[in-house]
Amino acid sequence: MRCERIWRGARLATLDAARPGLGIVENGIVAAADGRILYAGPATEAPAFEAEEALDVEGRWITPGLIDCHTHLVFGGDRAHEFELRLAGASYEEIARAGGGIVSTMKATRAASEAELVAAALPRLDALIAEGVTTIEVKSGYGLSDDAELKSLRAARALGQARPVSVATTYLGAHALPPEAKGDKAGYIDQVIALLPRIAKEKLADAVDAFCEGIAFSPDEVARLFAAARALGLKLKLHADQLSNLHGAKLAAEFGALSADHLEHTDDDGAAAMAQAGTVAVLLPGAFYFIRETKLPPVDLFRRHGTRIALATDCNPGTSPLTSLLLTLNMGATLFRLTVDECLAGVTREAARALGRLDDIGTLEAGKSCDLAIWDIERPAELVYRMGFNPLHARVWRGK
Image 1: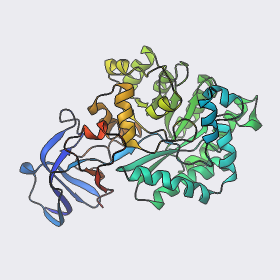
Image 2: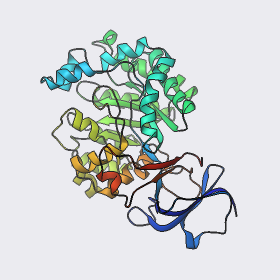
Image 3: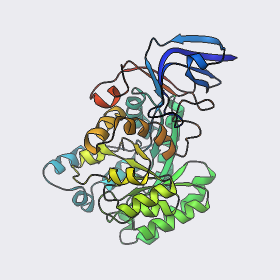
Image 4: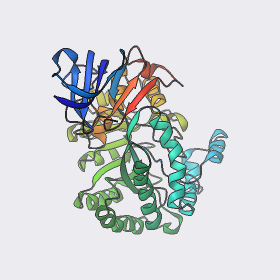
């Protein structure tokens, strides 16, 4: 059988759900052609391949390329000053209600050109790529006007043209209420909804997200937006139950959302509803750490109900200025008590599920995109255990 490239002498963590745990294969090979995996499994069971290029990885580990399934990579400016205020005792909510937070980034984002937004985001993206990330989700949400939101989505799409990485984009117009809409949340939601047909027609976003929280939008307002987005065939995601329990997790499940994210205050009903709907729980330990949250997400509830768990950086200027998915792995284990297997599945298979792309990425299986991360490690646990350490030997995106 012909193939373009073959990687031999590998230990594989396939994340294939048909295999136990991480789907480990001790003496494995990966063969690819036309950017897709032809075979990933034991060398002893492999077809006879004729490879244009054969690479011996000398016992290194190969995992699926990593996936950062929740980021806000496109924004203008930074919020270092607000970090100082928080250190002095101000809360996230106090800063937001005083006109800081998302609104302060809105001003810088509106002032930036599309090219400037791309240029600002590229170093953040490069840091993630350097750790083996091959797919990333990027949200808008800092423009909060039609023009600025469209500009942000175009910038996010442009990142995928500027670098060898797959970019999934999400429209987060319902991130905060801009100053010009003060006192008229219903009118602003109307504005966000009115932009949906253009976003869908121009294929600027793969999904629609909202911030369901007391300082942002109510469940009823989010439901109205989600109904409109779903009618246009757009997938759904939700920032839910981060600062309080507005039953956002249950709302996300009722709409069949791909994921509900944050979830520190989610209750038993919410976890059960997510499991039944197949809505992934995306946990964001960087934000938990950075805003010094004390209420842990209910990991035991998710386990009990069988809710899938993913991890992501939540890279953003205000609550998680984090560009390391490897550090996120350690945080997930250390702060949230996730197991090594849960952490690694959370940035591969379950992250792919949270993007609605498990049929194409997230595991090493025949037919899927050949996105690989090759590691200089002795065991997969090192990727979770170590901090400030990048053992990436090579990264492969679409077979190259």
